[in-house]
Length: 171
Image 1 (cartoon, rainbow, N blue to C red):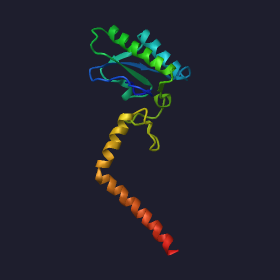
Image 2 (image 1 turned 180 degrees about the vertical axis):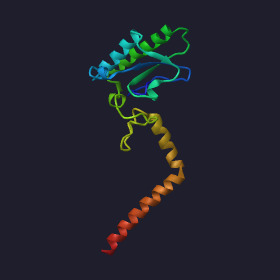
Image 3 (image 1 turned 30 degrees about the vertical axis):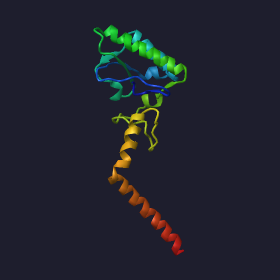
């Protein structure tokens, strides 16, 4: 599934290492016209139809900003088949967006900050659980088992609380 497109309810798009990726890159001139999710997905569909995109084995949107990658099956023998597959998925995304079941994180997509290996949506320790549930499932599952970090945090909190209580008892 694309890094910037979120499906709110139901299953997303299965991602395989066998996928080919159709990458659509945006320019600064395009930004003015792409103010809504609907406009952005229509622009993506238009770019795929006009064949103004690149086909790669890895998604480009995980390495750079201003690009959305749409997965397509690798089983196609020609690039036309890959583009048809990506166009069909983009049309499905459009229906999901128009029904309110999906959104595109335009703020992150058109962010001018450098790309840092994912988790850019997590600002000030508040992550969008809908955008990246796999990160949350992994993080919440490992935290209780990891006693090294938990003990360090608990000791820091306990020392802070004890100092606060001791100060109030002395007064």
